[in-house]
Length: 367
Image (cartoon, rainbow, N blue to C red; front, side, top):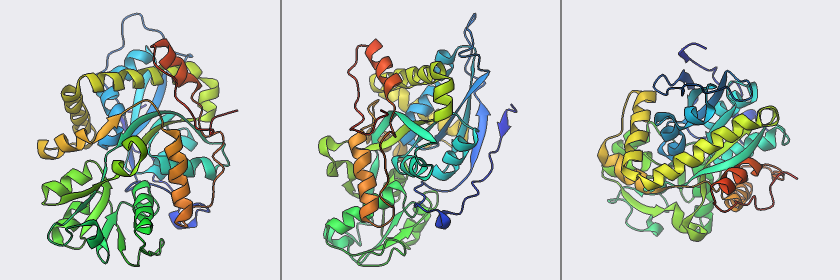
């Protein structure tokens, strides 16, 4: 495979999907090998595979994958089977890549995972592990919004119609007693769907009054004079909710369980290292972001963003069910049958080997 390949832009038109496309920001991806990770002498291929193709976003909420790539955890566990990577800007393109076999395993948010599973009638993917919780905030212009009640009547950005943060904001607004048409974004609060890449400019220009966004966009807004009005984690039991999961093609899971287990070992190892070495991990994630995008985050953005994310192996399955219910309540998603979306068998095997407690699928596991 060439050192750099561009995946095809997802061809599906969002508005035409029978279920709402639940995504992140823009489309696009870039595939590459990590030339810095070395294969140990005498290492063997896993399942006879030449490579395992791993996808993730260039977001700090995908820090597990960023660190595992940068520090060579993936390559260490895969032996002589080469770890290849593809970075994405949005859920639809990653799901499309997974369905086409362009990637085998991916780090992704809960909403595109739900949509991908439901749209394929439960045949395309499985969630095989968790990765991160938190890292989502409502940041506002403090001159215009001084309290939560002041959000009424204002223009608030979310990354995309029906994406994870859009659903969360619409649900929160409804709980305040405000009415908003989910499709148009018009109502007691105006929801402005804005790509995370341009949200800071929109905030600076005054075309939006605030934004419900993931990291590092939230901290970029703070650096521009914004104020954190609400951290979404405060709305959830134990302040935990899934922001990033690990998914796999079902065919790949069936045909190459040893390779999947190796990637999960690397993920668990990376999370353990991240939590034991937060400063080094933050630097490693930023270095990989720079390698992937050509631009590192400044400390004023990186430091507060990193602190707001918890890196965990538990997929927090009960919160995924709740997030799906919120999307249904908002009228953005037909009620999906999520039974079987999880297969945590290999993750629990890895956790058991390390003396850690098993994680639960909240009744949504494979039978």
